Length: 236
Image (cartoon, rainbow, N blue to C red; front, side):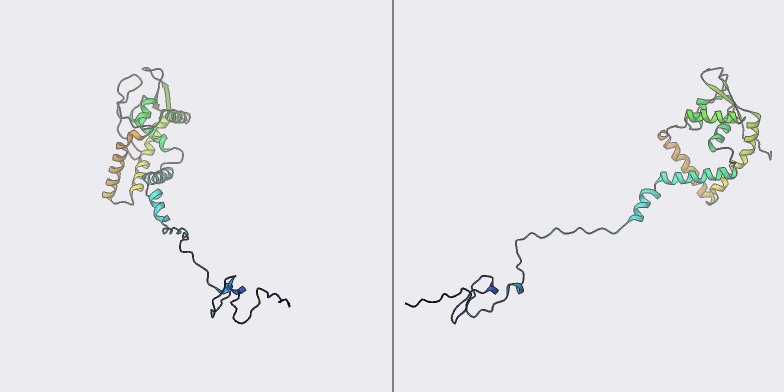
């Protein structure tokens, strides 16, 4: 018996339905057009989860945020107004005295013999700063400090002749500074601004670390201190 030669699995012959490499191992139906696997479109899985959507970024509003968070804040505006006032004070009133020193000299002129604690309350300043500033003014020869005859724990303050002369020179300059500060506003706006500032500090007085305490000023002997008129100026 003559043996038949084996037929290779990939060999083709008439009537055969071969397994083609192009079909990826799938038997093609008779008459079907075979498309190579590399040219077939990718199969889409209908149940595959879609990737999360990227959230859209809102348009930048940095300029608006800066104004709301900084430039339109009352504290920021008050700080800028204070910078302007201090700069104008140094220019018009004098570089050798500060606004706090002026406040102390003017109040001591108003109530000679006032003690340091009462003075601090009358100008809304903490007692330690008041004591240090009064000591500097004493060193400049503008202020005298002596132990109070009523309470030996306190120091009574009076102006020296040089201090009195300085106050007379500074009063006109302080009023000139006020006019310069308010000059960009008309008369109605000036009154409105000053009224609102006074109301603002009055209603928020207790929020300060050194609230204003208006009280009857007493001299070193315990009697009510005499109230003085506006210091005479050089023009008077």
